[in-house]
Structure formats: structure tokens, C-alpha cells
Amino acid sequence: MALVKTDDVVLSSRGFNGLSFLRQLGLMIGLAASIAIGVAIAQWSQDPSYRMLYSNLSEQDSGEIANSLQQAAIPYKVDTQTGAILVAGDSVHEARLKLASEGLPRGGGIGFEMLDKDQGFGVSQFMEGARYQRALEGELARTIGSLNNVRSARVHLAIPKQSAFARDRKKPKASVTIDLFAGRVLQEGQITAISHMVAASIPSLEANDVTVIDQKGRLLTSSESSADMRVSSTQFNHRKRLEEYYIKRIEGILSPIIGEGGVRAQVSADIDFTVTEQTQESFNPDLPAVRSEQTLEERRTGSQTLSGVPGSLSNQPPENTSVDAAPSGDSRSPVSSTIRATRNYELDRTISHIRSGGGDVKRLSVAVVLDDKKSVDDNGETVRTPLTEDEILRITSLVKEAIGFNGLRGDSVNVINTSFTVPAEIEPLPEPSFMDQPGLWDTAKQVLAGAVIFFLLFGVLRPVLKELAAKGEVMPAQVMMTGEGAVGMQNDQLTLSGGAGGELQPQQNYENNLNTARSLASQDPKRVAQVVNNWVAADGG
Image (cartoon, rainbow, N blue to C red; front, side, top):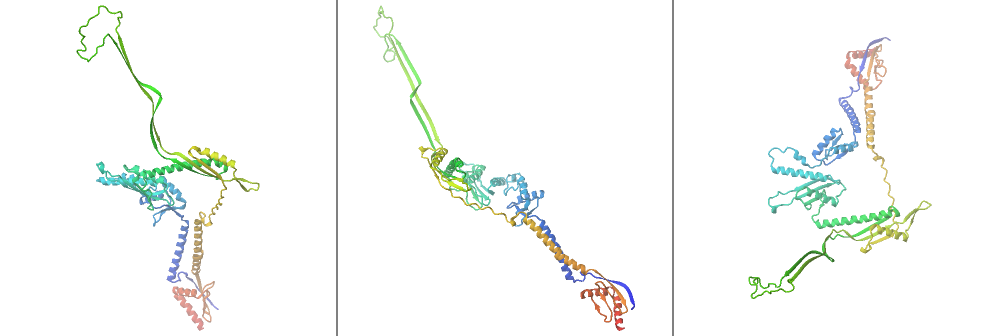
């Protein structure tokens, strides 16, 4: 049998090129989607969990905070629905400290920095007054918002235009709206402090004209709160502090004896808040003193004393008078003297002005309850022992000394001994579950992302690429012409044999043989025609 060797024929075909256009397009889209999903999952697993930094911010504060975070290289996001600023979970505290050092957020109000802006030319006096009032409202809102329990505040001022006439003057008024944190309340003293602070910031504004409400619309300052009611509230607080002071003294002196938590005391104080003023003037007659003294002494000499009505007649000597030739034996003239004394005495006088401010303790009522004495026996068990009468009497004496007992004003002290109810043991807090462990979700995200990527690589991409590689291998073919006209392809290649039957025997599958034959016919139709002629000639022979 003669063997005719012809040129080797290489039949190369790719499996991807053999697919239809729709299948090629679908395969390309699937590969691209798989790669995109893998990249997205890997990026998602590396992104940190974001937590809320601040919410309910004004546009100005949001812009300043975003600029500060960007300069500090802290990643952040803005919630498109609520406008809240979100930062990475591990950077929340760092971001808040950074912003606090810069005074952010400043709050919704605008303060006196509004006056630093250029007002422009030709601004009216009304606009200047309106801007000043708005700046003042913003500053007051910032001050109120700095309180611990207050999240934010708004202040509205109603300042009437003053008139030159005193009778037409109107008092200003103010209203304050406070937004409190969840679960927080303002004490009565804090509300009063806010009212007085606002009143002190506005000329001629009184604290009674300041209205304070919360975010739920509840009135915090009552219009019926008069001066007398405020005085009563002050008196009640004073009484409460005094009672707490006595309770601390009692428990402080008895706790070392009975044990910590073994003393319960209550004190009721009756206090006299009456304010009295008294002016008193008193004299002491036992201590007289000469205040002033006036003495008058008169002496007169002569035989006669002119008398009568003062005038010319009384001053003339009498008629028919004669003078004795010889004087008597006594040559002295008669003398008359008069002494007058006026003395003013002052008694010891005392003027006292007494003003009692009130707050005097009129009576104290004290009730003390003592627990049994506790000891540990030989078995390690706690044993309760009631107090004896002598111990109770001694403790009563200690209580009286601690409160300054005064029997004249009606003080009373009652001390009893009883067994306290043992409180139930507090159940320990449950251990945090495995799902609440810090960093668990970040680790779970990375593990899930790795599993998905592994599935895409080895469950989707690898089989597809393996199949394409198997279909796209270069399939060389050698066409050998023999006496029977046979063309052979070995090693998993297409074998065309023109033997006795002239049959086409596929070694792989029919689809691959058909594609190979079509590709060969399109590339070298002359050689294929020669092969077919050889087949026909061999069948005819």
C-alpha cells in the first residue's frame, strides 16, 4: 500500500469563536458582572462602619464641620435623608475632640459675629436695630444651650420702642424654647436661673415677664408664680436642707456603732419664718446723771430799796428828808442775797432696734430605726441579735446630743429597734452575647466577602475559563493520503478515513468535528475537494 504524504494541515479553532453572538455577549456580561461583584464586595468589606457624629445641624455648622473633618483627614459621610454627619466608628471620639477644640458646632443661632459683617451702604436704623436684636437672641440661645441638660434653645425678644413720655413706657418681654435631651428635665432652680439670666441681659426686663417652654410645649414658668409663692418655695428648700443636715448627723454618728446601712432616720423641723422688727426705748431710774446745771446768785446792799413802778417818780428822792448828824454805831449797810440753781437730770436711756430674719427652729421631731446587730457564728452564718434597752437608751442620748435637743421647745426623739428586711440579691448583668462582641461585624463582613469572592473565582470563573481553554486549544491535523485515500488525525483530533466504507469517524464529538470541517473547508477548499475526490476514487476502485 503506497503512502502519499501531503503538507500538514493545521486546523485551529477557538471554542469562544464557535459560540453564537448572544451566547458570547451573555458570557462577557457574566464575566464582567462577576468581576465587578467581587471588587465591590472586597471594597465593602474594607469600608469601616460609620456612626453618627452630629445631627440636627444648621447648614453653616454642617459646612464648617465637613471642612474641619476634611482638613483632619477623617473620612465622613452625610446622610441624604436626615442631614446627619457620619464618621468611621473608631474615629467618633477623635472627631468630637477635634471639633470641640475649634468650638464646633456653634449652634443654630447667629450671635454678635453678625455685626462684624459688612452692613453695606445706606442701611436704615430699623435694619440695624433688627440685626442687633437678632444677634442678641442668638447669643442668649447659645448661653442657654451650654447647660448640661439642654440640647438647643431659641430666644424671642419683644422689645417695644421706647417713648419720650414716661407714662407711655412699655416693658419688654421674652420667650424661651428649650430642646432637652431624651430623659432629661430641668429643676425649678434651673428654670428660675434661665429666667433671671435673660432678664438681666435686657434692660427693664423683669424675670416674671420671661416665659420658658420645652420642646413638648409644656410651660415651665407658671404665670401664677407670685413673689409670695417664690418665698414659700425658698422656705421649703431651707427646711428640707435643714432636715437633711440633721439626718446626716444622726446617721454619721450611729453608722459606726450599728453598721453601714443599719440606721434609718427622719427629722421633721418646725421652723418659724416670721420676720419681725422691734424698736425699744428703756430708761433706768437708778442711774441718774446731771445733764445741765444753771446757778444764779444776787446780792443787794443799802437801807432802802426803791420800789414802785419804774419811772421818773420812783427814781426821785422823797421830800422832807433829814440826815442824822451822827451815824449809829453800826456803819455797815444791810445786805440781801438770792441764790437760784437749775439742774437738769438725764436718766439712763437705751434705744434698741431688733429685726428677726426668721428661720428659727421651733421644734424638732426625730424618728430613728435601728437594725439588729449582726455577727458571724462558728459555722460562718450571720446571726441577728436585738439591741438591749440600755443600748437603745445610750443611742437615744447620742441622738439628742447630735441634734441639740431642747426639751423647753418641745423636741422629741423616738428610737426603736427592728429587723430590716433583707433585700433580694441583684442579679448580675448578663454577659454580652457573642453577637455583641466588638469588631465581630467587621470580621464577619471580611469573612463573608472572602467566601463570596472564593465562590466567584472557583465556582464561576474557573469552570468557564477551563471550558473555554479546552475548546480553544489549537487542533493540528495532518492529512495523509494512502492507497485507500485515508486522512488521519491522531491524539484526540478529527480522523477522516476513506476506507471501504468511506465513513467520517469522530473521536471527540459530532459538534467539534463539524466545526473543524467547516473551518477547513472555508480556509482551503481546494485541498478539501481533493480529499473528497480521493474518497470517491477509492470507493469506485
